[in-house]
Structures are given as C-alpha cells and as structure tokens.
Amino acid sequence: MRSDLIFGALTHVQNRYKLCQLASKATRKLHKPNTRLQDTTNEVLDRFKDTVPMNVEVDQELTVA
Image (cartoon, rainbow, N blue to C red; front, top):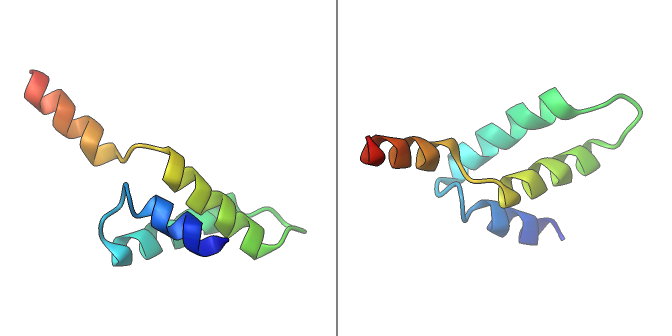
C-alpha cells in the first residue's frame, strides 16, 4: 500500500513537505511513457525508503575530517 511506502520514506526524510517536493521531482524524471504514473510514484517512494539521505552522508564526512 502507498501509505506503507510513505511511512517508510519518512524514516529518511523527516519533513513531509520536503518528501512531497522530492517525490514529485523524482517522479517527473523517472516516469516512462506508456506506464502508469501511480506505478512510477510507488517506485520513487520505494527508492526513498531504501536509500540513506544525502545529508546524513555529508554530516558523517564532516565529523570524520
């Protein structure tokens, strides 16, 4: 269900507004013709759920240096 994908993505992106902005941009970039927009949106949210945000990686690099 999409709500599970959204809650999974919110573990990495704490701000819901930012999640909506990032998801809409990513959906526009990843959408392929002749596919459903809903499927692309679900794929984007699934990717957000599985990836670590860039801010966490940058913060870790700054603390190591």
